[in-house]
Length: 612
Image (cartoon, rainbow, N blue to C red; front, side):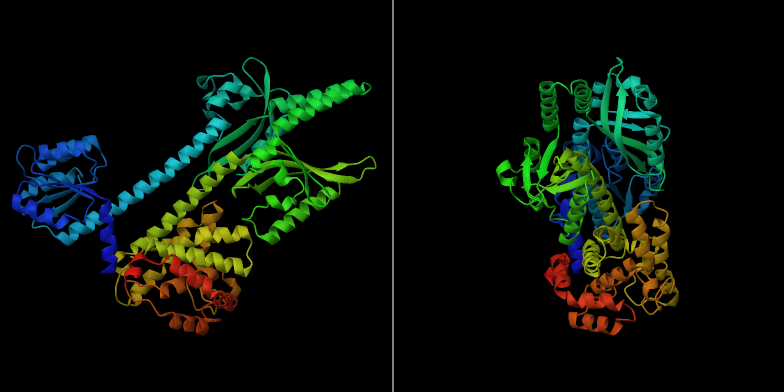
């Protein structure tokens, strides 16, 4: 009853048009639907219904067939010409067989015979409401992604090529810097802008890298249409489809021509005028000014305190010079990173520079407002006349926009994976909060167990897919309210293998992890689980963790075949099953951190539970 109450709330999202010429039937259904849907529009014939549809935002049409002026089928055809995806429910009497067959043949929608089964009508409307909510959410995600894409398109030089290197897309900045029009570039090889000064080894390395599905980054000198040159800092990423095959390549570039020209100029002038101190000083100052204006500069003393930052660094970090100079470098620490990992990373960086090594790396720092900024950085030691290190200097190029786009793409992938996880749970009448809780429980266990941050986040993203294989289990078994018989249980157990087969061939690390979780989360520590009967540490740690998270949540939640267990009974079962069903080390971690699990259980409590 509570589940039905929750599902009925979905109808509040629907604007419904009801078309019926029989006043008695019309008033009866109007009374039944009033208050259940967002807005209810009533029409007495097809012409009136069509006009109402044109003038209002309608999500679902319920219509009789035989009506004066314009019948229900004619109205439906006209509506489908306006919106080919319009959702329509046809109601008809038994003696309307000819019309009904025509409606079915033309795939107009769902069909109900009179007198109407109101329960079945509500089920169809709830399903339509769910689909509408999902469509709106997908449009929101796509809209956000498109906005991020437009930001990058405005700020970076972007092109796409097919697998053979033929240009399929360029943006406006690419046109402007190359001097070519879009029509002159599309369908051509990137050789059209290749400069003879760029060594062929660079292109060999680039192709070897991206064809191995890795990201390539480097500087390339290109030729404009008029013969001039330009230099770009380039990142090329292969776009891989769900089968793990490369569909195309996308390249993002930043124009560094001015910086590279000034470096070359300084080099030539310095060699030419080494005997002329004044000219050398002037050129050095010019070079310093150009570098200072084009890059973020930071210097750090041997005690790891900030001794200098330029204006560009202050702009990028959100701090003033007064707030940074004299402060420990750790003021910029990325707080999302574990303290021990941060300290290990920083020690490695400064120890390398103390040994007079120059480092090229991506650095993630935290702004004053708490957001992150990303830089490609060259960090190197400054030496005194005796060759001893007296300070460290970093020259950085802001790549935050590019990183935000990459993160948005990754977040979109994770959200889609999360939605797929909800599909499996929805089919078995479980809530989306189940996968939220399982994911969060898994993240806690992974962290406390000592997995790396990368693996912890990967399992957090993958664990919602643990029951995706349920999409292959028949409804009569999946949603059976009673105990399954032996044959039904054999079929139910195949969901682990079904999920594995769906995901195993993906080249994506998250989907590979999801395949492992699906395959192993029903294995047991003593070897009595399924599908492989693995024992102990033969079971992947992802499966051992998800098993505890899934069972804890399943026992503590109402399901179609049972009521939620009290907490005391659940804890007793975990005590008894430590070393049998579950990894004993993980069970101890579970009990040691029980408060965190209970907090998550309350935070993501199913809505209907709060009404109990």
